[in-house]
Amino acid sequence: MVESGSDEWHRQRAQGIGGSDAAIIMKISPWKNVLELWTEKVEGKRREFNGNELMKWGNILEPLIANEYSKNTGREIITDEDKCHYIHPINTFMIGNVDGIIHDKIKGKGILEIKTKNAYTKWEHDWKDGNIPIYYKMQFQHYLAASECDWGSFAILDLGSMEIVTFDVERDDKLINELITEEIKFWDSVINKVKPNIDDSKSTNDFIRSYYKESDDDLGTLNLENNEDATKWGKQLLNAKNMIKSYKKGETEALNHLMDIIGLYEKAIGDNFSVTWKSPKDRSIFNEDIFKKEHPDLHKKYVETKPQTRRFVFKELND
Image 1 (spheres, rainbow, N blue to C red):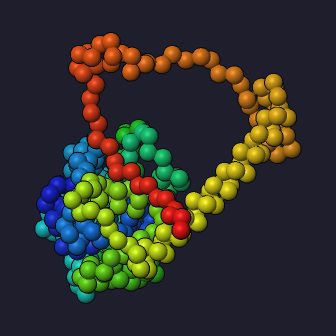
Image 2 (cartoon, rainbow, N blue to C red):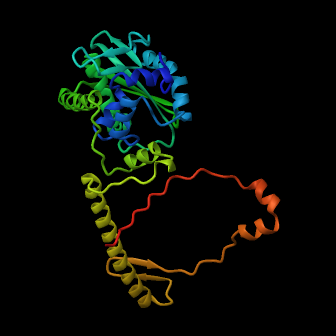
Image 3 (cartoon, rainbow, N blue to C red):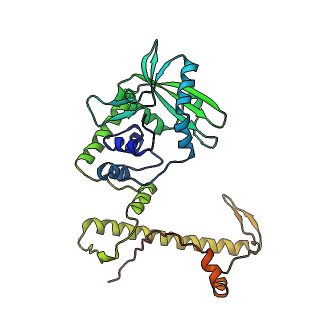
Protein backbone atom coordinates (compact mmCIF):
# COMPACT_ATOMS: atom_id res chain seq x y z
CA MET A 1 0.00 0.00 0.00
CA VAL A 2 1.22 3.52 -0.79
CA GLU A 3 2.63 5.14 2.34
CA SER A 4 0.49 7.96 3.67
CA GLY A 5 2.20 11.31 3.10
CA SER A 6 4.63 9.98 0.46
CA ASP A 7 5.14 11.68 -2.93
CA GLU A 8 3.19 8.89 -4.65
CA TRP A 9 0.35 9.29 -2.14
CA HIS A 10 0.15 13.01 -2.90
CA ARG A 11 0.35 12.35 -6.66
CA GLN A 12 -2.62 10.00 -6.52
CA ARG A 13 -4.65 12.42 -4.40
CA ALA A 14 -3.99 15.26 -6.86
CA GLN A 15 -5.88 13.29 -9.52
CA GLY A 16 -9.13 13.44 -7.60
CA ILE A 17 -10.76 14.00 -4.23
CA GLY A 18 -9.57 11.67 -1.49
CA GLY A 19 -11.04 10.85 1.89
CA SER A 20 -8.94 13.35 3.83
CA ASP A 21 -10.07 16.08 1.39
CA ALA A 22 -13.72 15.59 2.31
CA ALA A 23 -13.59 17.46 5.64
CA ILE A 24 -11.72 20.34 3.98
CA ILE A 25 -14.37 20.69 1.28
CA MET A 26 -17.09 20.60 3.96
CA LYS A 27 -15.14 23.33 5.81
CA ILE A 28 -14.72 21.39 9.04
CA SER A 29 -11.03 20.51 8.81
CA PRO A 30 -8.86 21.94 11.60
CA TRP A 31 -5.74 21.72 9.43
CA LYS A 32 -6.45 23.00 5.94
CA ASN A 33 -8.84 25.29 4.04
CA VAL A 34 -10.55 25.01 0.66
CA LEU A 35 -8.32 27.60 -1.00
CA GLU A 36 -5.17 25.65 -0.14
CA LEU A 37 -6.71 22.37 -1.30
CA TRP A 38 -7.83 23.97 -4.58
CA THR A 39 -4.31 25.32 -5.16
CA GLU A 40 -2.84 21.86 -4.57
CA LYS A 41 -5.19 20.30 -7.11
CA VAL A 42 -4.81 23.00 -9.78
CA GLU A 43 -1.11 23.79 -9.47
CA GLY A 44 0.18 20.53 -8.04
CA LYS A 45 1.90 22.46 -5.25
CA ARG A 46 1.57 21.88 -1.55
CA ARG A 47 3.12 23.28 1.58
CA GLU A 48 6.07 21.20 2.68
CA PHE A 49 5.15 18.84 5.49
CA ASN A 50 7.27 15.85 6.39
CA GLY A 51 4.78 14.43 8.85
CA ASN A 52 5.27 13.94 12.56
CA GLU A 53 6.17 11.12 14.91
CA LEU A 54 2.55 10.05 15.40
CA MET A 55 2.05 9.73 11.63
CA LYS A 56 5.31 7.84 11.26
CA TRP A 57 4.46 5.31 13.96
CA GLY A 58 0.89 5.11 12.70
CA ASN A 59 2.19 3.92 9.32
CA ILE A 60 4.59 1.47 10.94
CA LEU A 61 1.93 0.00 13.23
CA GLU A 62 -0.88 -0.11 10.66
CA PRO A 63 -0.34 -3.75 9.55
CA LEU A 64 -0.10 -4.87 13.17
CA ILE A 65 -3.33 -3.06 14.07
CA ALA A 66 -5.11 -4.61 11.08
CA ASN A 67 -3.91 -8.05 12.12
CA GLU A 68 -5.03 -7.49 15.71
CA TYR A 69 -8.42 -6.28 14.51
CA SER A 70 -8.81 -9.48 12.48
CA LYS A 71 -7.94 -11.64 15.48
CA ASN A 72 -10.27 -9.74 17.84
CA THR A 73 -13.27 -9.75 15.48
CA GLY A 74 -12.77 -12.97 13.53
CA ARG A 75 -13.18 -10.99 10.30
CA GLU A 76 -10.96 -11.46 7.27
CA ILE A 77 -8.93 -8.38 6.35
CA ILE A 78 -7.39 -7.66 2.95
CA THR A 79 -4.77 -4.92 2.74
CA ASP A 80 -3.66 -5.43 -0.87
CA GLU A 81 -3.06 -1.97 -2.34
CA ASP A 82 -4.91 -2.55 -5.64
CA LYS A 83 -7.98 -3.99 -3.93
CA CYS A 84 -8.06 -1.15 -1.39
CA HIS A 85 -8.24 1.55 -4.05
CA TYR A 86 -11.73 2.68 -5.05
CA ILE A 87 -13.15 5.03 -7.67
CA HIS A 88 -16.77 6.16 -7.53
CA PRO A 89 -18.63 4.58 -10.50
CA ILE A 90 -20.31 7.86 -11.51
CA ASN A 91 -18.27 10.67 -9.99
CA THR A 92 -14.89 9.27 -11.01
CA PHE A 93 -12.99 12.11 -9.33
CA MET A 94 -14.06 10.64 -5.97
CA ILE A 95 -11.32 8.23 -4.97
CA GLY A 96 -10.64 6.26 -1.84
CA ASN A 97 -7.52 4.49 -0.60
CA VAL A 98 -8.78 2.60 2.43
CA ASP A 99 -6.60 0.86 4.98
CA GLY A 100 -8.27 -2.49 4.50
CA ILE A 101 -11.21 -4.46 3.13
CA ILE A 102 -13.31 -6.41 5.63
CA HIS A 103 -15.10 -9.65 4.84
CA ASP A 104 -17.74 -10.46 7.44
CA LYS A 105 -19.82 -13.65 7.19
CA ILE A 106 -23.02 -11.82 8.11
CA LYS A 107 -22.55 -8.18 7.04
CA GLY A 108 -20.57 -8.90 3.87
CA LYS A 109 -17.90 -6.55 2.54
CA GLY A 110 -16.95 -3.42 4.46
CA ILE A 111 -14.00 -1.04 4.73
CA LEU A 112 -11.46 -0.70 7.52
CA GLU A 113 -10.02 2.61 8.65
CA ILE A 114 -7.09 2.60 11.08
CA LYS A 115 -6.17 5.50 13.34
CA THR A 116 -3.48 5.98 15.98
CA LYS A 117 -4.30 8.18 18.96
CA ASN A 118 -1.56 9.34 21.31
CA ALA A 119 -1.92 9.97 25.02
CA TYR A 120 -2.29 13.74 24.48
CA THR A 121 -4.90 13.65 21.72
CA LYS A 122 -8.02 15.30 23.11
CA TRP A 123 -11.26 14.30 21.45
CA GLU A 124 -14.39 16.09 22.57
CA HIS A 125 -16.53 13.01 23.13
CA ASP A 126 -15.99 9.45 24.26
CA TRP A 127 -14.40 7.93 21.17
CA LYS A 128 -14.78 4.45 22.64
CA ASP A 129 -18.50 4.77 21.91
CA GLY A 130 -17.82 5.73 18.32
CA ASN A 131 -17.98 9.49 18.90
CA ILE A 132 -14.86 10.29 16.92
CA PRO A 133 -14.13 13.77 15.51
CA ILE A 134 -16.47 14.91 12.74
CA TYR A 135 -13.61 15.22 10.23
CA TYR A 136 -12.90 11.49 10.59
CA LYS A 137 -16.60 10.72 10.17
CA MET A 138 -16.63 12.76 6.97
CA GLN A 139 -13.58 10.93 5.67
CA PHE A 140 -15.21 7.58 6.40
CA GLN A 141 -18.49 8.42 4.65
CA HIS A 142 -16.48 9.53 1.60
CA TYR A 143 -14.86 6.09 1.54
CA LEU A 144 -18.24 4.39 1.83
CA ALA A 145 -19.49 6.49 -1.08
CA ALA A 146 -16.50 5.69 -3.29
CA SER A 147 -16.54 1.98 -2.45
CA GLU A 148 -20.37 1.68 -2.49
CA CYS A 149 -20.10 -0.29 0.75
CA ASP A 150 -22.92 -0.15 3.29
CA TRP A 151 -20.73 -0.30 6.37
CA GLY A 152 -17.19 -0.26 7.69
CA SER A 153 -15.19 -0.31 10.87
CA PHE A 154 -12.68 1.79 12.76
CA ALA A 155 -9.68 0.31 14.55
CA ILE A 156 -8.08 2.90 16.81
CA LEU A 157 -4.89 2.27 18.74
CA ASP A 158 -4.67 4.43 21.85
CA LEU A 159 -0.96 4.75 22.56
CA GLY A 160 -1.78 6.07 26.05
CA SER A 161 -3.64 2.97 27.24
CA MET A 162 -2.14 0.62 24.59
CA GLU A 163 -5.70 -0.46 23.79
CA ILE A 164 -7.20 -1.09 20.36
CA VAL A 165 -10.79 0.11 20.18
CA THR A 166 -13.01 -1.06 17.34
CA PHE A 167 -16.54 -0.14 16.31
CA ASP A 168 -18.66 -0.39 13.17
CA VAL A 169 -20.04 2.58 11.23
CA GLU A 170 -23.07 2.38 8.96
CA ARG A 171 -23.54 4.20 5.69
CA ASP A 172 -25.27 7.60 6.05
CA ASP A 173 -26.86 8.33 2.66
CA LYS A 174 -28.14 11.75 3.70
CA LEU A 175 -24.65 12.88 4.66
CA ILE A 176 -23.14 11.23 1.60
CA ASN A 177 -25.55 13.09 -0.72
CA GLU A 178 -24.54 16.40 0.88
CA LEU A 179 -20.90 15.44 0.58
CA ILE A 180 -21.19 14.48 -3.09
CA THR A 181 -22.96 17.76 -3.88
CA GLU A 182 -20.15 19.81 -2.34
CA GLU A 183 -17.42 17.64 -3.88
CA ILE A 184 -18.95 18.06 -7.34
CA LYS A 185 -18.95 21.86 -6.87
CA PHE A 186 -15.35 21.79 -5.69
CA TRP A 187 -14.13 19.56 -8.51
CA ASP A 188 -15.89 21.76 -11.09
CA SER A 189 -13.94 24.72 -9.67
CA VAL A 190 -10.72 22.72 -10.06
CA ILE A 191 -11.48 21.68 -13.66
CA ASN A 192 -12.54 25.20 -14.63
CA LYS A 193 -9.78 26.83 -12.55
CA VAL A 194 -12.25 29.03 -10.66
CA LYS A 195 -10.62 30.04 -7.36
CA PRO A 196 -12.81 29.49 -4.28
CA ASN A 197 -13.95 32.47 -2.23
CA ILE A 198 -11.40 33.64 0.31
CA ASP A 199 -12.80 33.34 3.83
CA ASP A 200 -11.92 34.85 7.21
CA SER A 201 -10.21 31.78 8.71
CA LYS A 202 -6.74 31.82 10.21
CA SER A 203 -5.81 28.79 8.08
CA THR A 204 -6.54 30.81 4.93
CA ASN A 205 -4.43 33.69 6.25
CA ASP A 206 -1.57 31.30 7.04
CA PHE A 207 -1.76 29.72 3.59
CA ILE A 208 -1.76 33.04 1.70
CA ARG A 209 1.24 34.23 3.71
CA SER A 210 3.03 30.97 2.94
CA TYR A 211 2.07 30.98 -0.76
CA TYR A 212 3.32 34.55 -1.29
CA LYS A 213 6.23 34.04 1.07
CA GLU A 214 8.84 36.28 -0.59
CA SER A 215 8.22 39.58 -2.30
CA ASP A 216 9.80 40.61 -5.61
CA ASP A 217 11.30 44.09 -5.43
CA ASP A 218 11.74 44.17 -9.22
CA LEU A 219 7.98 44.29 -9.76
CA GLY A 220 7.75 47.86 -8.56
CA THR A 221 4.41 49.22 -7.27
CA LEU A 222 1.07 47.65 -8.17
CA ASN A 223 -1.58 50.21 -9.12
CA LEU A 224 -4.89 49.23 -7.51
CA GLU A 225 -6.76 52.42 -8.40
CA ASN A 226 -10.18 51.68 -9.95
CA ASN A 227 -9.81 48.04 -8.88
CA GLU A 228 -13.27 47.32 -7.46
CA ASP A 229 -12.23 44.32 -5.38
CA ALA A 230 -9.19 46.09 -3.91
CA THR A 231 -11.31 49.17 -3.12
CA LYS A 232 -14.01 47.04 -1.47
CA TRP A 233 -11.63 45.11 0.79
CA GLY A 234 -9.49 48.15 1.46
CA LYS A 235 -12.54 49.99 2.81
CA GLN A 236 -13.50 46.98 4.93
CA LEU A 237 -10.01 46.74 6.40
CA LEU A 238 -9.93 50.47 7.08
CA ASN A 239 -13.33 50.34 8.80
CA ALA A 240 -12.24 47.35 10.88
CA LYS A 241 -9.06 49.14 11.96
CA ASN A 242 -11.03 52.29 12.88
CA MET A 243 -13.46 50.22 14.94
CA ILE A 244 -10.57 48.50 16.71
CA LYS A 245 -9.01 51.91 17.39
CA SER A 246 -12.30 53.20 18.79
CA TYR A 247 -12.77 50.14 21.02
CA LYS A 248 -9.15 50.45 22.13
CA LYS A 249 -9.75 54.01 23.28
CA GLY A 250 -12.80 52.88 25.23
CA GLU A 251 -10.76 50.05 26.74
CA THR A 252 -7.99 52.45 27.82
CA GLU A 253 -10.49 54.89 29.33
CA ALA A 254 -12.20 52.16 31.37
CA LEU A 255 -8.81 50.77 32.43
CA ASN A 256 -7.66 54.21 33.62
CA HIS A 257 -10.79 54.69 35.74
CA LEU A 258 -10.53 51.24 37.35
CA MET A 259 -6.82 51.68 38.09
CA ASP A 260 -7.55 54.99 39.78
CA ILE A 261 -10.36 53.40 41.84
CA ILE A 262 -8.24 50.40 42.93
CA GLY A 263 -5.17 52.46 43.82
CA LEU A 264 -2.66 50.46 45.90
CA TYR A 265 -4.82 47.33 46.31
CA GLU A 266 -3.53 44.14 44.67
CA LYS A 267 -6.96 42.52 44.30
CA ALA A 268 -10.50 43.75 43.82
CA ILE A 269 -13.93 42.15 43.33
CA GLY A 270 -16.73 43.84 41.43
CA ASP A 271 -20.37 42.98 40.61
CA ASN A 272 -19.41 40.82 37.63
CA PHE A 273 -15.63 40.99 37.45
CA SER A 274 -12.42 40.52 39.41
CA VAL A 275 -9.12 42.38 39.17
CA THR A 276 -5.53 41.64 40.15
CA TRP A 277 -2.92 44.38 39.89
CA LYS A 278 0.29 43.19 41.47
CA SER A 279 3.79 44.64 41.48
CA PRO A 280 6.04 42.34 39.43
CA LYS A 281 9.47 41.19 40.51
CA ASP A 282 12.42 42.74 38.76
CA ARG A 283 13.86 40.56 36.02
CA SER A 284 17.27 40.38 34.42
CA ILE A 285 17.61 40.95 30.69
CA PHE A 286 20.54 40.42 28.34
CA ASN A 287 21.79 43.67 26.81
CA GLU A 288 22.76 42.52 23.34
CA ASP A 289 23.89 45.96 22.16
CA ILE A 290 26.54 46.29 24.87
CA PHE A 291 27.69 42.68 24.40
CA LYS A 292 28.01 43.19 20.66
CA LYS A 293 30.05 46.35 21.19
CA GLU A 294 32.42 44.83 23.76
CA HIS A 295 32.65 41.28 22.30
CA PRO A 296 31.97 41.54 18.55
CA ASP A 297 33.65 38.21 17.66
CA LEU A 298 31.67 36.22 20.23
CA HIS A 299 28.49 37.95 19.19
CA LYS A 300 29.07 37.04 15.54
CA LYS A 301 29.86 33.43 16.48
CA TYR A 302 26.69 32.77 18.47
CA VAL A 303 24.10 34.89 16.69
CA GLU A 304 22.15 33.12 13.96
CA THR A 305 19.94 34.69 11.34
CA LYS A 306 16.33 33.52 11.17
CA PRO A 307 14.18 34.16 8.09
CA GLN A 308 11.38 36.66 8.67
CA THR A 309 7.89 36.70 7.21
CA ARG A 310 6.62 39.52 5.02
CA ARG A 311 5.07 42.37 7.00
CA PHE A 312 1.71 43.63 5.76
CA VAL A 313 1.37 47.38 6.48
CA PHE A 314 -1.92 49.10 5.63
CA LYS A 315 -2.24 52.91 5.87
CA GLU A 316 -5.00 55.33 5.05
CA LEU A 317 -4.03 57.96 2.48
CA ASN A 318 -5.32 61.45 3.33
CA ASP A 319 -6.62 63.58 0.48
